[in-house]
Length: 149
Image 1 (cartoon, helix red, strand yellow):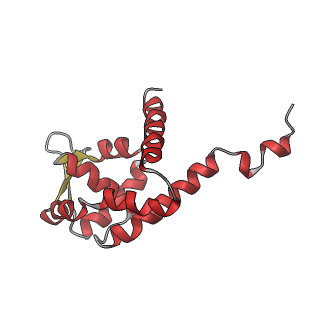
Image 2 (cartoon, rainbow, N blue to C red):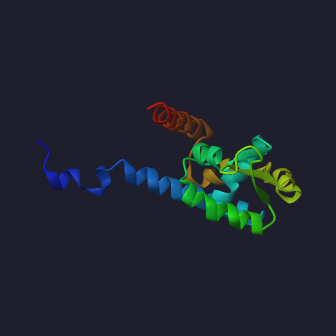
């Protein structure tokens, strides 16, 4: 039987490399997103909105796996920065619909090269593009399984 102290070593945890790599990747996004004057979580919201014109807060929350109490202040900042509109649904007052402003729509053209730039930035870690795609496929599979459970 493995001793408890071995189980609790940082190097034996799956959570730490996931956390650390996530932070490193987000750091690579930062200079790219600074040019758009948005944070990484705001960029994620924009990605959702660039796919669909109008989205409820609940749908954004589900898509990004964020609690609404985390998302609401983020959306308020985006609204005050002129990127989105927040409006109550005409059919159900409890539902808040998020839509892009013209400024938010314009950011899409400015952001179009971010995915390619990020892949290029990851070259500094000596990671091959194929390795990134394999990792993404594995992570997508994990996320899909959590949605279905």
